[in-house]
Image (cartoon, rainbow, N blue to C red; front, side):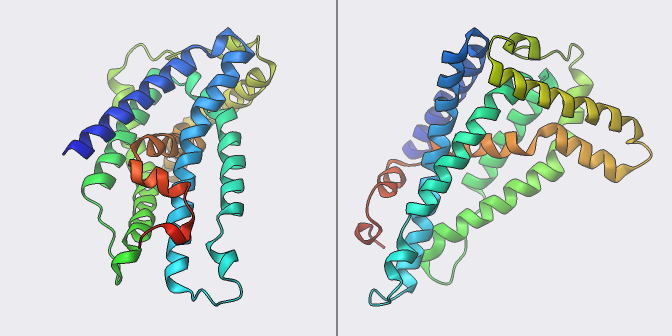
Length: 253
């Protein structure tokens, strides 16, 4: 119970940091750089933890005398790829959140809460060897995540849209980022995509499949996955974080 409460507090802190970073975004390039760091670090740590679980599994199934054993348990390439991808998402994610309407913001937070509730309480990975339970559970969690985004978001967003009458941006518009050239360019691209989605939505009643795809685009796949990784970083246990920075062969099976 104490572990659950610690995770809830950590996620709550992450939520406050997220909102603060996005609120300060219009005040200049310095705050934009801080927001990139604030979003990227938790995502990087979460990615490191997943890479460690995979490397640990490899260390259990391969003989130490195997010539390529060091390569299979090495996390160098995985860590490097994680840093690059998470920093790239960190450039885009604050801008995407900054431009969210109230209905989109509310639906996204509800969806993320539901996904984490299901993953942390109901989904238990199964494996023929208990050593692999962590890895199997991670794969199950990701499957649930993608299903939740594809199926639940359209329903949640539509419900939020129906009772939120003043559906204005939560934080601001693209013009609010005009003093940050890079963020402003990203914002223009996002706004352009949103306009296309709005235009296509006029045909949603004719093409139900198109309607579903539009709602999924509104949720923003990058945004959902990025925020999922972001909060996943805050929900990690101290042991998982320590393991991520310890040699695989020293991690107890």
